[in-house]
Image (cartoon, rainbow, N blue to C red; front, side):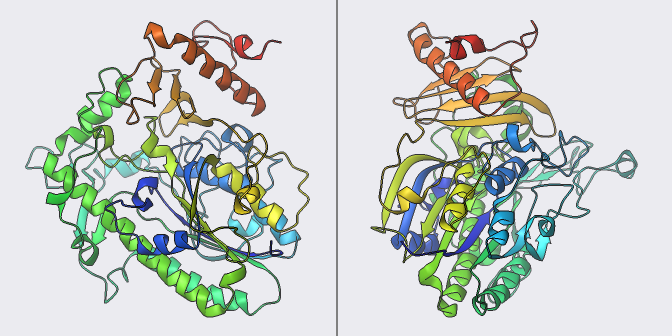
Length: 490
């Protein structure tokens, strides 16, 4: 295996894993091109359905309970605005090992520090500095943000929210130029990345380039050039669209009934078409990055990674965006890796459970860094060699304490079952062998109690490993059906 590769990370925002899967109707020729020479990791998951905790996990190799970021760091409702004091990011260690690191685009890891404080050179950075996502009381006295069509006809693609302003789900925009996306915010980030590549290649040191795009994050506002690639009439509604959510937590039902049920089925199809178009636009920009890397002559010894921070429901279960619903679509993210000098047997798939926490240990091992710090994740390097790592995880775990509204939710997923502990409502259990779309909650079914108890035990074991905060035994908060002693004693 080659020594000390360059590392190029292209991270989108809110992109589901299935859109880059083989045979999917979403057109992503450049990720297909990457996969043909690399590896698709088909079971990659984020720890939390939110940008900030997931990005902090990617950068640190730690779960939220250890790095300290649980929700949006740029709002008044932030549980913590910065990383815990003992957290060391992979970028700091790469810099100490002689790498030159450049971050273009979205940060959103800490509200107290910027990329430059953690070993990065900054180019066209977003989600840092004075960015703030809340509105003050004085702001609201000026009226709702944007259009408020309540009391009148609802515009197509809008969800009415009286006093809040409409939520735009999707919109077709005029093209910004010959490429279509010249007016898009991500184009500025793309230009910074394209300028950085030859500069990095001209140096003597290995390098790490992070390209953080905002798309395909909602709203799905996409230039016409890409929207025209899809015909909504040919798009099927999701398999889970008819889920009534009657056996799911009430907050899931409220999301759908109060917001998304305003959209007609034709609008749902149009929204999916716009989301696919957005993903295709991001894929086109990714292709420009690949071409620029090829032009440097350093592609052979550069590890290229395409992935996202979390997904989007985009109509599955009748829902949109991400947040407290714990369904697969918000947590399952794309991950494709290519490294011509370092990957054995390219053009293959790995279906082991992979976490965003696994990338920091991977980068440090490839850089030859002897890492003294605890990491939740494990290095993926054995998979690159075509080897089966010893004692690889048999489950994936999530930690969610809500977004701008607080909740306590943890989940455990194996290849057979998925258990969701909802501290704010009743729990969920899905038999994935027969119900891969998570339609039927069998948490209270007597035939599934043994399976449920096994997953609750695994939840407590992982919580103990990661120093989680869900162990209080007080009567009104100790709501898991079996307590930690059931999984930890002995």
